[in-house]
Length: 98
Image (cartoon, rainbow, N blue to C red; front, side):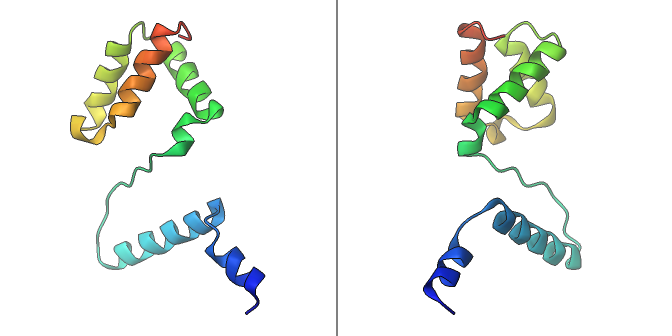
């Protein structure tokens, strides 16, 4: 295998991540395990993701950061919501983007 082939194999692309997640899903399925995997990271700060968040809040006509967080906590335990998510939501309201 050439060096460029090795480098491209080790690159963490969207396709590589999806392939790995599908493999994980298949393996867990064989074991009868089901669950939910949430990925957080740099993508949460991409403009398109923030745009989607703003769109959803406006579409749902939610008027405060507290109300958004209350809604999220109906579906996710508080210990699974990163603090940066709370700051992002609060910041959107404080900056007048909502």
